[in-house]
Structure formats: structure tokens, C-alpha cells
Length: 326
Ligand code: XMP
Image 1 (cartoon, rainbow, N blue to C red):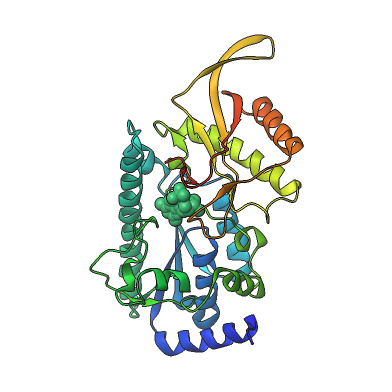
Image 2: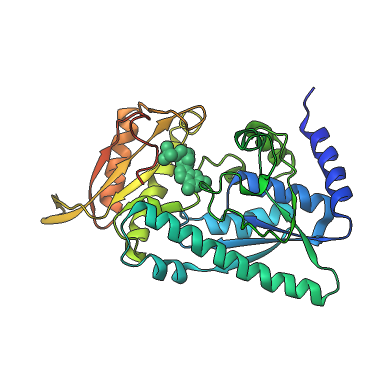
């Protein structure tokens, strides 16, 4: 008989037994798994935990603030944010190939995270209590997918930005290893985490970097962030969040089309809406969004987002189309 209160109490005991008086580090992604894992560890060992959040500049509007303000306020975790926006832009300059973008983002992420980690490790060591543990938000399906749990350090490294290095210097703490996503959400709610984090739909580690078809630049990210925020707001307002698995919003930065806006001709970019329904992201169908919702989204984006003069709808299932465009 599953009860989130019991699971929390049980995990807190287990974490305390594993960690003792050792220090613990955790990378937050902004997603639900790392947020809940860190909150559990914080409940167990308090300020022995320090969290690191990398702002790679490929986040959605408001995401950094959700972590820095709302999450920290509700959990009390000690958080170090690394502002690496420029570093990522520099590394991505001139790159349009999707796989190359993914590799660069993954590589830079590890660099930034390890540098932050090294600072914290040095600080803790000087303080006499070294960091010996690393928290991972590994879920039960991840454990199963990787073949039962041996060598768990590299689960989904192809999929998660910041896949762990081979020569891991930490012992892993994985308080969500026996849990499914729904259970993780229930625990997050029980721990009082903000709903924006607990109910968050899937979002890829490489973030908006793989939702700009073409080179990633600061201006293009700004355009996409604005359009994405409108889509999310309208879908939420229409009560559709539960029905939709996720709705990537994609900027076709290398495509232009002619339009007429205000009293002049424009030559702007299309935005693609990719609403999908799915059970597990392995297969998906395109969500039949109500026309009035689509109309509102289209009107708002073309009125409010400079440079966008066309909104198009992706009506492809998976397969053959993947959920993300890159
Ligand atoms: P695709 O595009 O392969 O996406 O149909 C399936 C699901 O995975 C998410 N996705 C990622 N998640 N790192 C992640 O953490 C990634 O590199 C990544 N690429 C895709 C995608 O959003 C969808 O939910």
C-alpha cells in the first residue's frame, strides 16, 4: 500500500545511513527528478548537500528563476548557479548540424559542471569534510532500461546532458531508484515543491539548442523563448496540460517566408508547434488541439514576437517523426 509519506520517511533513513556526516553534491536540471531527489537528500542531511544549477542559456523563459527562487524557497537547499550562457553561445557559434550541437552542449555541460564541482570539492576539503557523494535522480524505468542496475553511472548518458564521466570520484546516492514518475511527482508534492517543477513536462537536456533549426544565436533564442512562453501559457489556460505529453516549439531559423504585418511586407521565420500525446515517448501521436486554441496561439505569436510571421502545426506521429526536430 503505497504512500508518499512512508516512502519519504524510508528514503530519508536510507540516505542518512549511506551518507553519514559526508558532504553531498547534486546537479539540478530544472526537471522533476533531480529536484525531488535533491529535496529528499536535503530533508535527510540538510546543508551537507549543495546543489549546482548550470544556466546554459538554452532554458525556457522563467526556468532559472523557478529553480533559484521557488525551489530554493520551498526546500531551503543551498544552491550555486553557474551562468555559462556566453560559453555555450561561443561553443555553438556557426554550428547547424543537430548531432554536433548535441555533442557540443553535452561536452560544455560536463566542463562547466566539473569546474563548479571542483571549486566546491576544494572548498569542502579545506573545511575538513570532503564531498564524497553525488545525487542522481535515476528512476526505476531507467534502472530497468540499463539492464538491471550494474554500472548505473552511465544510464542514458546519450540522453541526459551531463552524462557521468567514467572515472567518477563520488559514490552515487539514488533515492528514486525504486520509483515511477507518478510516484516521484507525488513525493515532490508531499515535500512541498512548486507545482511548476513537479508537474513539468519532459524537456530535453540540450534545451532550446535543439529546437532552433540552424545556428543557435542569442537573438534566435530570445525569439524562441518568447514564442514558447506564449504556447505554454495558452495551453495551460485552456486546461490542456494533462492531455499533452509535451509540446516542443521549434524555430525554423534557416527558413524565411513572405508575410504582411502592420502595413508592410515582412520576411520572417516560421514557428512550428509540435504537440504530442504519448505514454512513454517511444511512440507518440500528434495531439488534436482545438482550433480556437491554435488560433489564439497563432495570433499571439505573430503579434507579439518580432521576426515570426507564420505559425505551422506538425501533424506527424512518431514514428516516423521523432518528438524533437533535432
Ligand atoms: P525524440 O525526439 O527522440 O524524444 O522522439 C523522445 C523524448 O526524449 C526527449 N529528449 C531528450 N531528453 N536529453 C533529454 O533529457 C536529450 O538529449 C533528449 N532528446 C530528446 C524529448 O523531449 C522527448 O520527450
